[in-house]
Image (cartoon, rainbow, N blue to C red; front, side):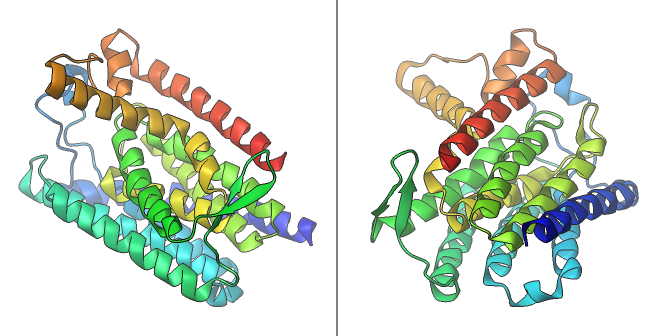
Length: 327
């Protein structure tokens, strides 16, 4: 059974990678034709101003390719609730990001969805996901696993609050991290790969296949997204990936380990929170610029140095998370 599943996971990865690599050039040309280009912030770094006009919303491509590959490769997935829930989270958060991106490229400003509307839509997707999981996932409960202690704690009514926070915070965390060429793409590949291991451990092979399909699609996207990027994922891609990661953590029952595995995303988010709180309360900035990847740029690091260093840190977080999950 495992050998068959491993073969299917490998094939899914290769097909998704090839699909995106083939489709992406035409997508880039089409987005250029529509003039769906990145709008850089006025207060942003001078080195990033040259990126203005680079096609964005590339997340559309790896979302659609991933979903198509998953369902085409195995017709039985049309009856699998885990697969449907992953698709709901992936596409649902992607749609929220798409609306935000579309408003930005049409208006040619950095003002997309109003923060309140954006948060409301993210909240709606998170709440519906939880309701669907409770209804369609067999034995879905409100307990969480405690790494190393080999025990579970039933959170009861607090569990849906945790899930809600995982989705809203996770999607925004990936969104904040998506500020350098290839950064969020690489970190997402690493984090999602960790959950492939957890899905295989519990013999939930459809989830493992889906996760690996997304990793393959992201690797194909990386070919065009690494510095100098020819396309950006936009909020369409970053919100979708954050939602997908949260869904994986919930469906593999590794909610707590998401904090560690997504450690770099958490660090990026905390840097923004610390910066805002410090400036509003003391009138002083802790970092030269937030999110923290820009801080290192302003210290003189090249974009590639920051990205590769953060990838390495993400890899360490992923490895530690896997070790804790299997012990």
